[in-house]
Length: 183
Image (cartoon, rainbow, N blue to C red; front, side, top):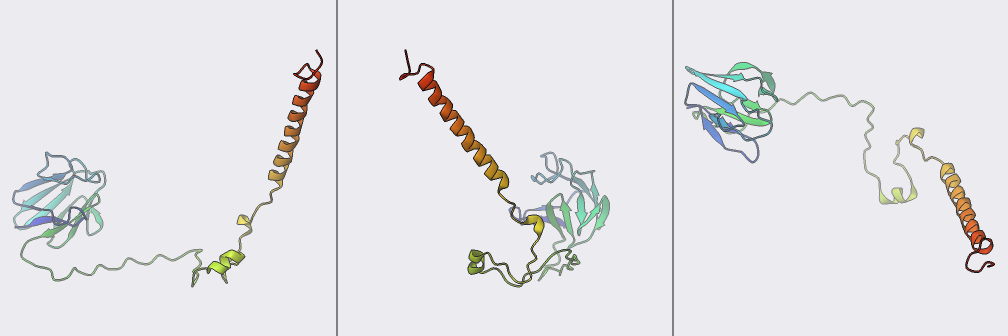
């Protein structure tokens, strides 16, 4: 008897035997096979048994149904294939074959590195303390340190404003009838 076996961590080993002609799969309780995962739609897919064939049909799910990494809408499944509902991966197991090792997955083609510089080793603490850069490290003037001209002007303006305020307070106290002024 064929069954679906969940491969995701936390749900590993959970399985569902396909023993009826039509099985519904989804997140809510009214499905024959409920998978409580947010990436699985409420009514994600249907599985139909047609003799020895297992037919899977996506029910316009939000996150899609995939077979061996390819998005599908309807397809006949084979034993050992990896099925994915949203982010939940499952394996089709007929119970007859016991795999000794997982089938090798072909490596994805490597993407060319564009504008990436590989530095052969890290930076030593002494280099950081001295502000040194590793050999071959390009300096980019777009990220160079900016001058503190604006900060200086703001600081001088703040000091002048503070002196004026203190002077005004002293003037009010002495000449405008403050505590020690004329009565």
